Image 1 (cartoon, rainbow, N blue to C red):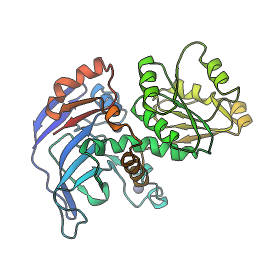
Image 2 (tube, protein in one colour; image 1 turned 180 degrees about the vertical axis):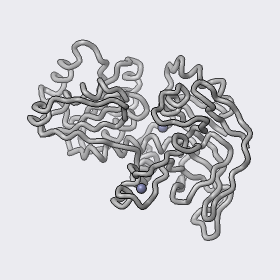
Image 3 (cartoon, rainbow, N blue to C red; image 1 turned 135 degrees about the vertical axis):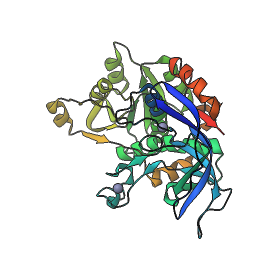
Image 4 (spheres, protein in one colour; image 1 turned 90 degrees about the horizontal axis):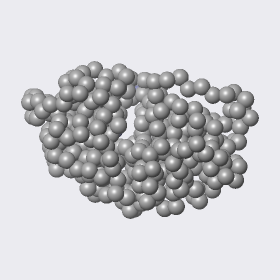
Length: 337
Ligand SMILES: [Zn+2]
Ligand SMILES: [Zn+2]
């Protein structure tokens, strides 16, 4: 089969590899759609902390069942969504039903070869029925479920004021899922005015803020001095994460959605005065995937607006460097095959 392989930072090639054979009880899938995200760009640029090359990228995946084991709950031809977080099922976290932060977690396309290839073999527990979603919608479920998971971690109360920092695809997912909570107001903050404008058009009643010298003052005025009940950071930037803590109200919470390699510092008196919570959010669980599927079904997710770019998978080695240099207007690119 043909695969797209990142052999080393900056080098993406089409490589002929042998077709995979499924271990006992696994299904074989024909890959159909692969969403591209910041993680893939990081891998290509060599910025991913623990990545071993060569690597087949691709973790936002949908496909069709090609072959099933005996007594499978799937049939040949079924359209499916792939959960790329392969958990062990036995560790302290898995036993608490938190497979998203499994001690032995392997993510397809990061720790192990992913979906930028023609065929993939997976255990059935990593595959969910697409339930009538289009193949492209099905490939968008993974990144949206990261937003859905973060919002569930934030435990929003009705009428909360929410701030989402970072208007990339993950931040947009967070903002959408926060807006589904009862009577919550959602503000979005980013350094990029184009991204802020896009976000504002996407959601019902989102208020956009572009970072400038007066931003602290403007956010304070917007919240009548209180600041925000729950702040979500989806920037992948340590300075922004530290800044975001300052935008949290008394009794509020700050959810770190994206991860950085740095040490995050904060003032203890500030933290204690607010009795604030700092909450980590990592990946997503099956519950989040199903929640996203339901929301796409109900028409609440503007999936065609989010899917800004489409490409044939085997044109990606030519196109990816261009997108990295000038990502103008790129929200969610999806590769087809
Ligand atoms: Zn992703
Ligand atoms: Zn585990």
